[in-house]
Image 1 (cartoon, rainbow, N blue to C red):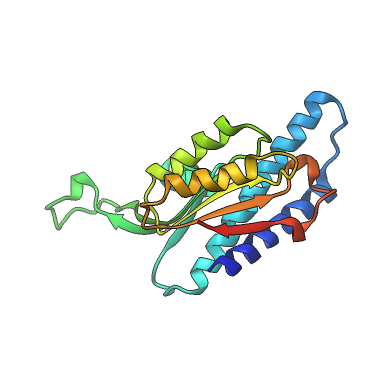
Image 2: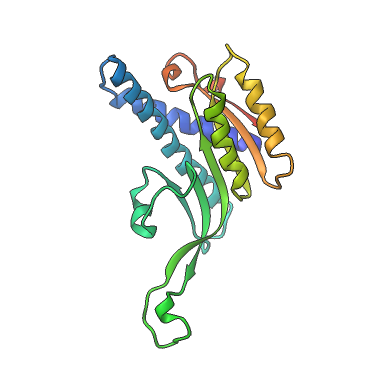
Length: 205
């Protein structure tokens, strides 16, 4: 499972990096650089969500319905009135719920509503460097969520103690969690063209 997840993350990073290489035209001004980094982060989330969903569907029955919810997915907004579902990424199994007006009325023609029966993946990504508080906030979101698999993503930061701190903190917070919990380290948006896909790592907590 860890090796498969690593492959999916590397593939997503490669796709996002290639997209940026072909589409980024922002200047190097301070505000523009900040926007560029934010766009890269969102783009990475988009590709990761779709990659996780594709891999999940390969191992499931065609009759089962699974959807990915993340900020940029406007198709999900049309379905449920939102596209982001509590976390940066949620991939869940869907079910149909009868509307209240049709409840106990077999003659009603009301359409059913889509609902998520349970989450297969929940993902939180916090790429700020040397910011324990920001990382901890998103770790706590994962702790409070319920899913078969949980993933926390942070930036590679070999120049500080935060990598070790994050691993140990996530291990402490999820020690009683029944989920499969993973920590991934990817290049910070500013390092996308200095570091490469081989620098990415995944740790099973």
